[in-house]
Image: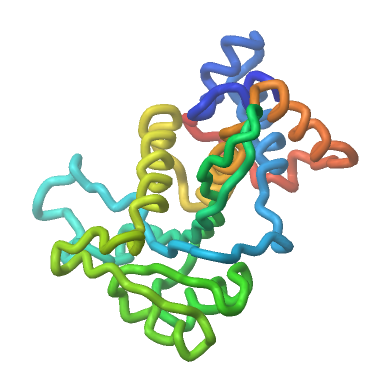
Length: 240
């Protein structure tokens, strides 16, 4: 648990198997059990200013011949990509010397679609009524004002990326961090296990101000009473 929690971008099952001198399949099982500790809580809620954005994972077919590639997969197409929706709260905390510093916290989930019927219920569940919600120009967010939110937009299509403090750069930074974690550490992730890797990235982001020992202590506390069998984790040994 300490080895897994102390790596900034995660650790692959191959590396963990070498560190612990166990088989890769055993290391993968260990990682999957520990990832259960990262699961996001439905009880957490955001308030104040919250950025919302969506990202699309996968879909690259660079090794396929042109004639075999799936057509019309650009942009927000979900033919070969998996949509993920995220919400990020801008907040503050008092550091060790008593100074106030800005900090952000995130929630992110695999979703079936990026339409209003899918995304708005997530916002209603995790963002307090009356909060200031900042999004891009996606039509799925059109109903936010009617739901009682102070809805602000940044128009990326018009090459507007910030208007004062109206921007989604913070959550886009999280997406960049998540992509680097996948590409640099795990290389590829199946749709079946994608949410677990998202939960891991969210946990690492939300606890990034903790020291290695503090994060380990937090994970250990979460592990008390957690017992999972192999059959409950959906066996699917992968290269990651």
